[in-house]
Image (cartoon, rainbow, N blue to C red; front, side, top):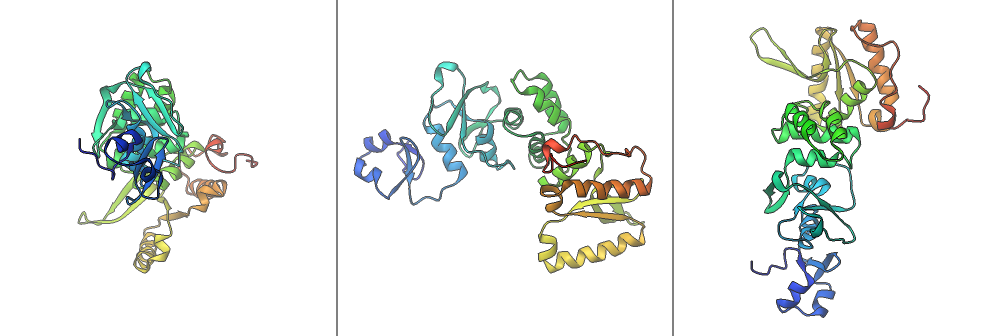
Length: 308
């Protein structure tokens, strides 16, 4: 391939193509890893850094784990190192900022011109890097955006021999289709891990003629309770705010009870959110609601040290 300094390249390749050491050390080039550079005129992106990590390895290596997630733009938390996999132990290389694994190339696909772990393989790999809730967020995203069914994930995790396959299987059993956002996943997981009955996802309320007039993110239709996450967009955009007001008026007419949750109700005070939902479900008489919430949610959300 023709030398292209707009793409990450090894220092040796730059020298071979007429660039001087002085130029490579100057402001015209940006260092990604030791001996890996790219033109400073290019915008730094997660994908560019993944390409830089791959440049340090054999040509049939592939981006895996968190690096594969970055290439696919999957919703994962910040993870500092890049992750590359090779097919044999002898091909592993050690570089600062890059973790090298031995993996099975059977599930490798090509995206953005790079070899990366396939969707299901990536999910299993991430089970060793992410918490349960963060992994379910990825699983719900795969089901919504990439066409991977929850059943496929469960089967693959059950057959896998990956060292973290048991963690992956636990998470896969919580994955659901049709979830619209990571925050909706977190809200659902908060409730389920606390022992509340699992809510229905994206319930559609139809008029007599069959037209969809409302849709609830998470709901308990048997007792007409809806639980929804509202981000800033609902407040900052006038049209959304007005639609929400009209929607709530319609819900009141139909005797639906809406419990609205904002980001602080998940990231700062999840216990308050749980108590609100718990109180409403008990008052409405939903079968299967425990009198006391479980503590299984605490290791996965803020407030682990709080009293129940």
